[in-house]
Image (tube, rainbow, N blue to C red; front, top):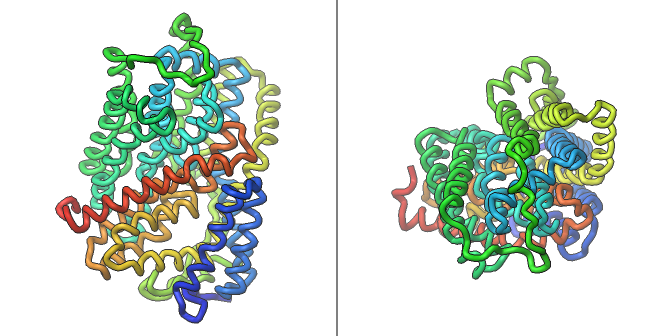
Length: 542
């Protein structure tokens, strides 16, 4: 049994079909943001609405829709849920052994100013983890660390989400750009260079935006040197590496430059006043009295995590581990049965649906290994590790259900063609397409939770539409990824990861409301910038 997608099922009307296609997304966001429905219930209700649209409006065979949901749910557990589970497990180990208190104190020792702490953790350190791992790990780790040094849960989640924007396009060793090149057939290095001529402007802006969102514009102006040094060092290296090397090490190099520049600045400059939360007492200064050996021991699990995740993400490592064991399972009723149709493909093309159970090479295995090593080095007995692991599983059970449901929703929408209908609606904007091109990427990431998935979903459509409206396909394709990074802070996966890391399960709606307008405003700024590149400074395009 085969089935070909139809992107305008309601009498050929794109407008009417778009309303149907966008309804599940509006329902999901509305339930979370305004009705305060718990995330797992909101996702399950929205999943039912996607099935109704797919089967009764788009006429997708019901077995295919169910298979797409099952495929997405499995992908939600492995690799995404696998990462979240073990990052939280590692965090629980550090809390159990008291090491996270020392980490908190050591950061307070660098600067007691909460604005500087937010820059170091949410922006610079989070970008480093994004470059090595991605898939929610930066939000989980950054938010947990902010909580550990005394940030309120909601604020920690908001800052981790805002900070995890600039590095996303080059996350996981450049996978989003590599995937974009594979889908579009455009030169990889040109796409890397074009993205590196868009994102640095926002990498410079984000530190200022981050501090202003936390403390207000006046408080931000007091630490403008730190915002400038952290953002500018990141932006310069991001531009240089993406344009002269490629997409693979952009985030890693940029984050290290930003961390080093901030630490160097703090040796010669301090803010005039130390900004703290209104109800916060002055810090006790314990970290300053801790020995270097004690501080190193406390940071050891996170140092090990950084090294192991970086090595795990290397293509050679993944290839070797996949060679040992990586079974593949074609999804029944789905693999090769759904055909993508023009204009999203030059001719009807069968969609692949093969689930790869890459347990060994999965990014989430790296924090599991790190947790076991750290637990042993910190003196925990095996039975204690098993007990902590069991409590961690119980604590994140509903979050794992939510993530699986969200990926089931996204995969059903993708295979049914609902996402493609939305893409065609954006493409119909003609001369204004350069503005809406990044917003299409923003929508794709908001729907799928992944810049890589958004690039795969809309990359070819961006290229085809760019040719139709007379702008550079490289510009439009890169804009999909650049705009997509701003949608990362509002996708359900990131919201759930942030809620788990900060202990706010059931408060996903509050977290979403705290970042939604930041996400939309930044995406609109990307759209304006891409229009300027398209029509005012076309020489910026490789």
